[in-house]
Structure formats: structure tokens, C-alpha cells
Image 1 (cartoon, rainbow, N blue to C red):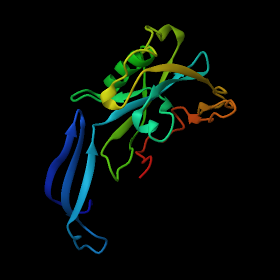
Image 2 (spheres, one colour):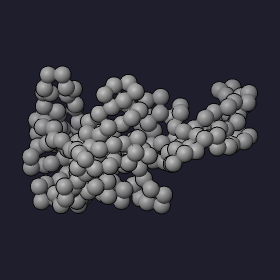
Image 3 (cartoon, one colour):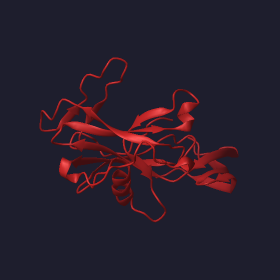
Image 4 (cartoon, helix red, strand yellow):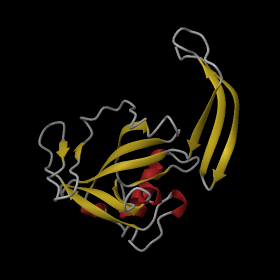
Length: 208
């Protein structure tokens, strides 16, 4: 049975573009059954997002985008290698968002996708969730150029110009279809990925 939470008040203390910060005053049930003292909590609300592990089955590669992110620039170069992703629009199903974003970002039309998990990114500060999918593609699914390196990438979302890259891996070797990243070049980070079948579908938290 869920523990009790009493919301005393809620208000928006900041809003710009689609970023919004809510302030809540609340109490919640403690381990001994008593209610806590009044607490003030902030929630960074920007909606949910989708992301996909896009796997070129024939080529044995995973497809990524390279994007400039201003928040990352404050602690590094700002250029990140990312899985294709995007924000779920109001009233849009996550899978529909995914198909649109994949076509816009890397130029592939998806025929089938598999949901892996939905998880909170940082529940101590934001209500945003990621709906993560696996998508197998082939060369025949390439229907457009995707976003060019000189095209805009959504400045309101902290994005920028981007391009897509391939990352080779060692292939599917067992009935779980385990896909392990190939040794990375010097200075790069190797990534281990497990395709659907070996991934638990239970929600998980990426970080607190």
C-alpha cells in the first residue's frame, strides 16, 4: 500500500520555453506511521523523452548521433556521442515520437521496435522519464539523410548541430542475442549493450 503524501500547495516558480520548475510544500508518511514536518521540494518539469539503441543488423553496428549540448559544455567540450533521442510531445505516444526522431536525426524508417524499459533520470530533482527502445534496421530502411552537421538541432532543448556515427560490435553469439561493443580506439570509451531478450523490462533509476 503506498505511503501517504499530503500536498499542501504547488506553484510554478520558473518557466521558459518548455522548461518549468515547480515548488511543492508537502508532508509524507514516515517509517513509524507519523507524518513528516512540512517540506519544500522543487521539480524540474520538461516532460518525458524517448531514446533507442538502433542496431544495423546486417552491418553489425550501432548508430549514434553526435550533438552539441550547452550544459555539457560548462564541464567539457560540449560535444556528446548519444543514442538517438527526443522529447515526447503533448498527446503523442512515445513510440510515435521515437519513429519521428529516428527519421529526423539519422534518416531511418523504423518497421519494428521493442520497448526495453522506462526509468527516471534523476528523481531527486526532475520528473522526466526516458522510454528506452531497441530498433533493428537494415540498409533498406535508410530513407533520408538525417540531420546534417550544419542544420539546427533545437536550441531550446540545449541541442545543436549534429551528425550520426556507427559503432562496431562483436555480433550476436548466443540465444540472448548479447551485443558487446568492440574494443574502442585509444582514448574512447567501450560500451557494452545487451539486446532485447536479456534486458529486464522493470523500471530502473539511472541516477539519484
